[in-house]
Length: 469
Image (cartoon, rainbow, N blue to C red; front, side):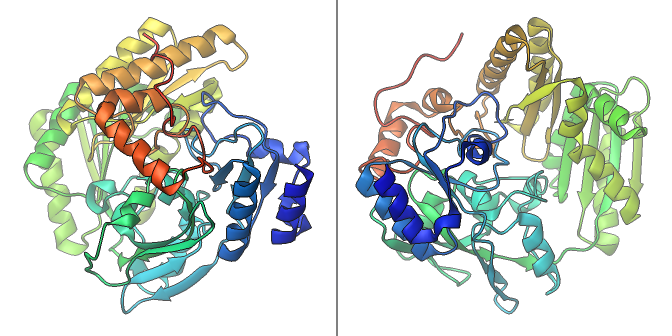
């Protein structure tokens, strides 16, 4: 491999090829402890599409796999290294190339941090909607590769809904440009959406043209506490049925609430006996926002909420939302965590939370449920002792049981984190053999030598081992 390393150094410079195992260790995996990972041959940090092209050609000629990677905030193992691969870390390609206020678009490199892009476009009175919970450190390239969601999906959609076009390096080193800069455009296949969510298995994204929106008003915030999860679920269903579209609608179960209150050393106002907390926001501004929140308040009161409170004080609203974003950090007090990602019909959120409570009792581990009630995307999070093989095994059982429960409720095994290297067998179970054959045909057409992220999302050969019972 010394020849390949020499070629990589020639392509990107000596300092951009990392081989010291003390350094490359931190590039082995993302935030999902369950997903398999190996030791990379090298970590390469390109600064341009031209450098990426050179790296791809060198690796392809040497028969060495390439695993594209962003900041490592993923939760499916999609960016996990495989043994002897080259990890292509895109974080140095972090330029906001263009902001076009008149056409409401931005052109960015994949290493741009989500929050940095938001801040940059806000100066032009514009808004980039996708907001994963890790938005203060995750990168646009990672968001694109996993089709990340976030707290505002109920109104603004997931990442793909904000993508106009891409620049992608293909397996032969050629540079493909997809999409457009116009609002409308239906010329040819929609290759842009094909690459968004492909988890680096079809090419390396080196630039994106993103659609922006007018900057919304400062949101008003409502919180409602319920003594039964079923009542909270009924509130969500009625809000949707009545055509109310808040900019955010989040739910926290009792375990999440208790963890956050202990972590922040404050009360969220839920009160004793609270089984579920619903947090909603409206960014419509002025009287429109007040009417939306009043309508949501009325629904919550009608179904029997124990407490309903609204505020248009930005600081108070930010505190409530900070509590929602702090759930995973709060759970670290009790041990390591692995967070699941299932999406169910909104009418069945309460059933999923109940299933998680049952699974928690069966495996004897804490399971906290928090999620995006507005679109049914729940994140059950299993807490365990990482030094205990027994607890790790039980956490793995719980992880798979939750996925099974999601499918049984008419849902999907991932709403926004992706399949990665942890849910490959579940993908096959969910979409079936014809869809799997189609996936493999697309992969074979674009990456015939299986250079890009082999083994992520699905295997190019027969199905893997059976899903644990």
